[in-house]
Image (cartoon, rainbow, N blue to C red; front, side, top):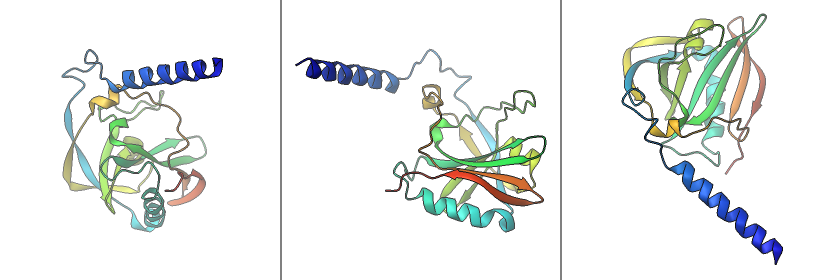
Length: 185
């Protein structure tokens, strides 16, 4: 009998907590946080990226969390003393902060710089991709992006269940450094 009461309490508390995270705290969402801005449309170096991006897209479509309208990928670069690390990560639109954070060398924070679409997937590139690699080029086009109210509810966390591909970028080549792929449907 005690086991059933314990299970009931756990389920009740989980359902209360789950409903709480679905509501949006309007006090933290203001005109300043919900905004639109334009970012450049990019193109990428086919010789270096095409095969890897093809592989990622092929895997991503079959991920259990994949949703055609919300799943996207972002690219990020971290420059270390001896290596430049290049990563491609899966996420949902509401997880991306389109604020103009600006690049800060000390905190290693940078904002979304540009965007490209490839095989029906939206890819977002951080400023560091432009600063530390020559893999992306601006086109004359731009797109409007805006922050989602869900961004301010979402709590960032390490999520190894989503696709993550990491490379070392050296001599205009990507050398695979590690990857995690999602559970397939």
